[in-house]
Image (cartoon, rainbow, N blue to C red):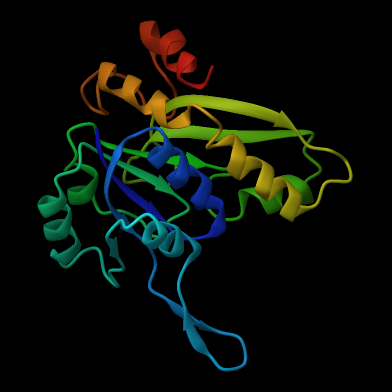
Length: 213
């Protein structure tokens, strides 16, 4: 399967590494532009960019996604699937529509709870006893696509944001995560089946949950 990966921070690195380890053809990586850091304000590559370069995967860092340039790059890469993990940009509809298997996102909460930014921080601040990761089809609305599968994990009362962050990053890319994506080809992409969004529907619910089993 030809996959385009989109991610930026350290959270996304285990997901990229899992795809590579599973033998998928990662045809390219989209990541946020490098930003200046520290006293010298020297441009620093994103953790995902560093990982991609180690594996000799082409890296693209578009500043805009809606001017047609990013879409043209994607057309040239011809991915079957786009996998997103903490990319930090909202994908326009024309990009969501391009891959034949659609776009999927690894989100660090048990959706629909804690859509949007900083779900790990909010789970800790609100004293949640449980959180997890969600694998979902992407839609134009933020974190509102059909849920493919979820994996829950308890939150230790003394666990810090950093510790939970690292655990969820590993949970979203645990051994076998890359192989699970092959099962997505058996499921219709969003819009192919009538029904509401935000949850796995009807007869394929159990099969979808098996993706994370």
